[in-house]
Length: 77
Image (tube, rainbow, N blue to C red; front, side, top):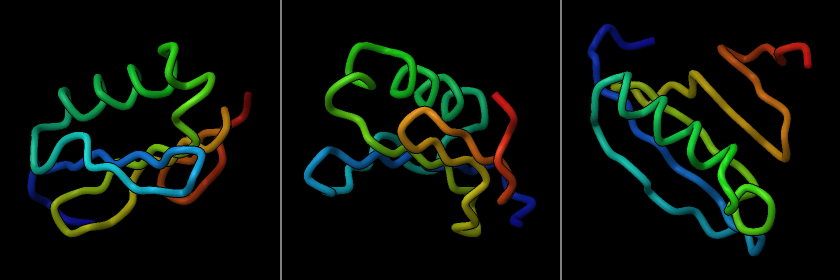
């Protein structure tokens, strides 16, 4: 895991296409974007997967169809 405060947010649509939402931003804007993507209207029909990566390209958050993993572990519902 990188020590840099640089995070990127990516999401995938129903066709499996990857989209870059934010690149190399602080933790707060990255988490806000992930929350919007995973709880907003688009999460019901367009957004199928969201990840946050750190500056070292390590995946530190993943949401896939309503299930969240953090640091490689699935969080309880």
